[in-house]
Image (tube, rainbow, N blue to C red; front, side):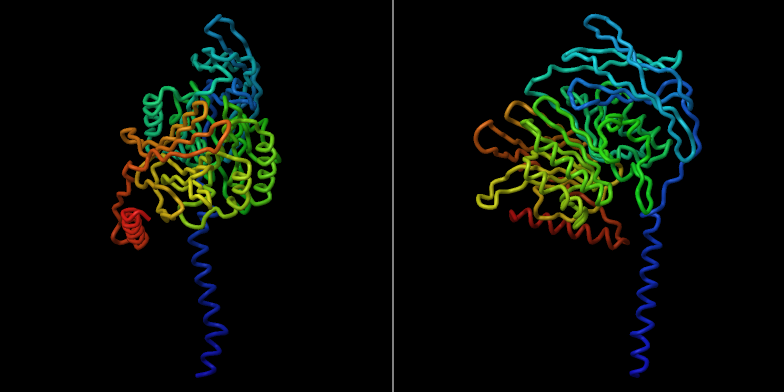
Length: 456
């Protein structure tokens, strides 16, 4: 019996453990290393896939990117200020990008002649071929009031529903001056998925700037993840702002300074981004500071993203960031820090959001103020002098789901008002009775409901 026990401990158990490890790795292999296949594609014969973004760090700057053909040709953007009808031609810089199954020429024009508080018409021209005319607005610099729209992961696989959601959201919130995305705007880094993404933002991304950070779905998987060159060619502000291959960017807009990070990278890259962020924050004179990144610093799924939190969160709190906009975890959540002595809520405020077809199971951590599951959401952020108001809406019906107000006087202590306290949380979920994870999630939901009912 002793010999059998020794043999089992020495050989059988290690073999069983190895077999279990191999089985688990085989199941996870595609998640870690499997890339969605890209179908062969041809370059657009005429200028298309036009994207209007911001440019340098200044509010009035704009970049325009587009595609046409697979070889470089003379290209430019023609802009007309409608106040005086003068036409300005801005030469574009071109670059041929080769993906796994095709080649296409990208162009970027940097518009630096724009004046504040003007309406412009523009079109892109490659060789002798021109796009239709589009319009955008610049706003008065130095003003203390404006608003923008925020969306988390989009990853549309529903034949263009995201375009309808975005256009409806902007109709409900016509004062929005631009759109910010927390990464994973596209489902996979393939031409066919980017084609769907351009359909999603059609009539939106040509009329107002779209500001987007990188998400994990923008990367090609491997032992070292790789971001295709096409991403900064589309979101062309990264062409000038990237630091040591890190997609970072900052923008001053009215009283707000935005800071964009690439949370998908390996630790050495994240540490370089922390140095960049600390330097930018230490030099910032903006009244309001907003950070945008893909991975939540405080995960709503459990203990995820601990490296990102360790790298960035101390800097975020030390330098007075007011709002952290995040995605990735496919649910809604809002978290407010609290003063250890008084218990009063303090900045930064952290939000997680998405408007994708996929919903994830979450952990209902007690540190969060509220959650939303089984639906899609977007946020509006309105800045007005000493006040910033964050509001979350359900995509379906555009009904108010959550709201919070930060009041930060020039002198004195900032305070936070929870305007969404009395709005019921959407926690409906129908589990698959044959899936243990679904049943466990349903039990977590019920436990959270009971906890909320007794005020804990």
